[in-house]
Image (cartoon, rainbow, N blue to C red; front, top):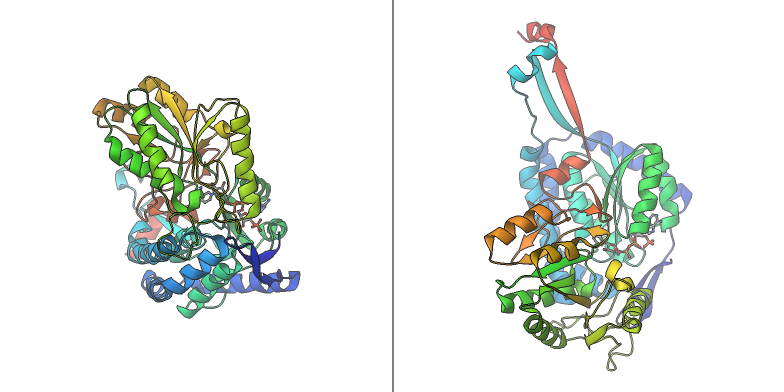
Length: 470
Ligand code: NAP
């Protein structure tokens, strides 16, 4: 895949980039190691100052970088501005909380007495150079939610961003440099996915995080496994959105539209499968379809646009194949299922609602990465849970109910890294984020995220240490 900015709203190639050669990659790896030697010894106060400065700069730049993101991958401009603001907020959150999240732990003396220790401390120390392989869909946020905690923990980062967002990738390196981070603390490597293996196998790289598709995750995890290096994987999702009879239907249907089409439908945590109790099925379908039809599709640079183009021609072709397969096998399109006539340039696809979906259809098992929803009718709570879990993925889930007994059941039984009741899944700096099953493993954000790339180090002191300390 060429490294280039191609505007998805027009199909026009705006800028090409040459990938880094082996010598430049080598230079940057060496720089990363030197930077780590210094950054790991920096105190939390200094690290927080740097990250806060990066947040300030990002806030100043938010409209410019938003335009770059929209140009590179097509998200509506208002969502791009919101993404930049969210990144600055997450940076500030980690600047403020990292020291406390990584504070030394002291096991109770009574618990460790028979280990012979006079004193024990558990310390979170940084791992080193971490490789981040990232996707284009939230080109700033995916990187910042790795970089902010990693840098606060004392690690340094190497970013291999998706090949279609090179200008956003370069902006990130520049942002951290302007904030005052020394050269090498955060570097962007403009390389294709073929270069990842050699970088990951390099002894100077300690660990890797990948957000992206299952095949990419499998490949990176296999290589890292072979090298016995830690990985965190944030992969695809096909989140269920369950609506039970006690739900506030108007709110549920309105939120369902947003949850499905956010980021032009290209979000891992978008609700993709709508599982609706038969008592409210017809009413929900009507409201939901009306909401999907009412969306404004168009130029992503316009504030009034709800849905822009998909990020690539291939992405749209993949989505079309899923929909066509479903229609061929008997699904009903309540709306959409076609390219819009008006927007014939660029990679647009109309918001689509499919019902009568069956297990034979590919879309039942695969992730629909675009504004296409499937709606299922269920008769009981057990059926709703079974349908929700009938997927290889387990990223997050949404449940609409005001029945406390149902809340307990869904909280216990949903196979997902999150269950959001009467609301829509969203990431937040203080909440753990990640999945189970084929959605990956490990967590980002919160204290769990920052500790993923730490060495949990036991500092054990024998009786003589006490004497020495006295
Ligand atoms: P992708 O094709 O897997 O690309 C993601 C990143 O991996 C890119 O930097 C890509 O580089 C690289 N890559 C691809 N194949 C690779 C390989 N074999 N070895 C090493 N690196 C490789 O995914 P995408 O199409 O950009 O993103 C969409 C997917 O990401 C969806 O499945 C979505 O659900 C998932 N996602 C998950 C989360 C989450 O938090 N769980 C968040 C966002 C997106 P190139 O661009 O150079 O190919």
